[in-house]
Amino acid sequence: MGVEVTALDPWTDADEWNRYVERSDGTNPFYRAEALRLQADDTDSTLHLLTGFKGQEAVGLFPVFEYNKGPITGAFSPAPFSWSCYLGPSLLNVAKLKQRKADRRTKRFVEGSLEWIEEAISPVYSKFVAAEFDDVRPFTWAGYNVEPGYTYVVELEDDEETLLKRFSSDARNNVRNADADAYVIEEGDNDDVERIVDQVANRYENQGRAFHLNPAFARSIHTVLPDGSIRPYVCRVDGEFVGGILVVESETTRYRWQGGVKPDTEIDLPINDLLDWHVMRDGLRDGLDRYDLVGAGVPSINRYKAKFNPRLELHYEITSGAFGLDLLIDQYQKHR
Image (tube, rainbow, N blue to C red):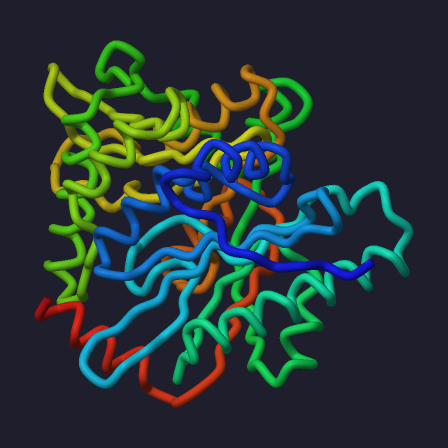
């Protein structure tokens, strides 16, 4: 029996889709239907919830965004320039399979998804980012370009002191020697979500770089997702916001989605070291397995992230179509 790929309705089939999301090991809160609908609205794209079935059993998920601007038709996951967390394809019920059957099921699901995309969207350009989807060979066999990307992941294991001892000496000292009476780190509210995004936007602007994450989108995603899915960790000094990190939380992993930029303050306090430590410590206490620092491709930022003794992991950027079209789409985004 093969794998049949069909598109669920983002509204009427949302509960069914979310049940599959919760059963997959390779998803995060951004896969939920309510989050995907917000991404589609924010980017003027059309959402397709591709779902692979083997008989009545769901075996794969692939949220795809159809983007049309002027002469451009594209297929994306995540949506173009949405600044969302990882998306791309995800599998269900494969851990129980032997390798031969797992390979066959993965190949059939990817092939069926790509056939659906070609027939329903006919994109001139496609771009997918697959993070917790290791077998990207079917994309290569189908003629797609596959390039590696990198991220750092800290294993949240053992006890707090053992975790801290794995940090570099300066990170350990920053955590241990900070005056506990000089600051407060806590999980903030919806207003703090916007404060974190605004701080990142200001940092990008000061560096002359584009930043497309809409604060209203971040606030909405924090509101619509289940409690604990988006955690705005904030650092306050004398009651004033001085820094923060937006953390996305799945069943096993915390993701350092946004924030943690260099604070625009003269306060003598290792704000980001303390924020990251609290995120990791709380994740360890709550029984999570990993802290994904979301990115390891910028040398200047890598030096900071590497002091937490993370493991380097791969994700994949999968593309097909006209070279440079994503840049043209970026220009459309800036003027929409």
